[in-house]
Image (cartoon, rainbow, N blue to C red; front, side):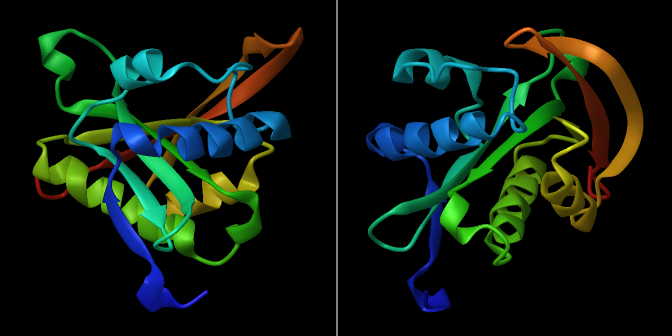
Length: 165
């Protein structure tokens, strides 16, 4: 894969079939989300902040996607969002997730977000390390916070505070 062929751009509705496929692959690991069913486009679109969602492509295929979602509808939390990032399994470990998450962090600051948070399964070491590389720090541990298919899971809470806002 030639780095010159890689592009990060805003996610558009036409990207959703490939985004949904990568989301499904992440769900199938059992380490990425409490969700067990990929939502339809309308549901997905309503969940994520429109100005902060991106895809990484090689010009033909979507290799990963990321987006922000609100943590609250209360006005005092308007600058706080949660990160979501998924990469196609075949390109994991090549540093592309870092490039995509950095794009999301930069876009979040341009959009006025002062705090980003992530809730990650402790077993998902790659995601924890990726977030740490981009300035996220562990702020907490939620034990047995929710079930996925009848099994209780913990979450590591991570946070990144903007130095610009």
